[in-house]
Length: 365
Image (cartoon, rainbow, N blue to C red; front, side, top):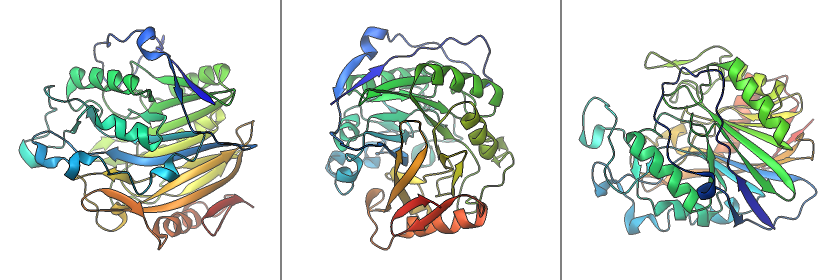
């Protein structure tokens, strides 16, 4: 079985209020390539989603990189990640070996949250089974235009699809004879704006016309241990409007999306079934080495494997609970905390949703 990344450079008639950046110099020839993917035999399509990924930063110094150059950081979970038709996640930061223009974060040194991962670290993600990474978030522009372009080029080199910036609003992947469209949204400069819901619906409607299945990734909502519940209102963090993730998720499904995966709050949030389509409002911190707080709920996360039928309707989901140890190594959590957190939050925030939790699975009632 082969998976084909179809490049999509979309020039829209309407504008975004995420800010603007110069376009990169990647051509279609450098993006389009056929890459091998897992051999999953199933009557359904399986899609894995995981949360925030930052494998270690060489900025401001290499002391923020994991031991052994991070080579085994995903070893405990890679077999799970590889076991799906498409495996996706949210990439926090850029792939760049040196240089770039760090964003102004009010200081320097260890307290400066600008993430610059060595480019060969993308190989760790590829070897672990990742097929797609969202670059729609507040850290994708950490090293300016240089960092963005290096990230695009690096992901292309390793055959990992991506989307979510003004340069690349969406991408289309072919797997098992199906065209899988994936779009990314965030409230940040250079990204496709999650707060512009009308424009988001237009993007998803167009993507649906070109795809059999549409997946949406977003980075939005408030942050931290006190932000686990869905408010169904616009959420702010540090005086920044991070969008209404409830309204956004429902709206993109109305426009044709089949699965919605969320990130941004750094904690696990509830899941919901809306019009037969699956929404995960936040998948938390999956692999965030050295620079993220990992205490309590910040250090646990689900790997969610969603099964859908040919029409994109939810069939079931399998959940693997994960925790981070040693400053950011994801390992399987046998106590199942992420699963129980998902269940409690879903029962609290969406008691009417047609989902039940059994064992390690989420099923339709």
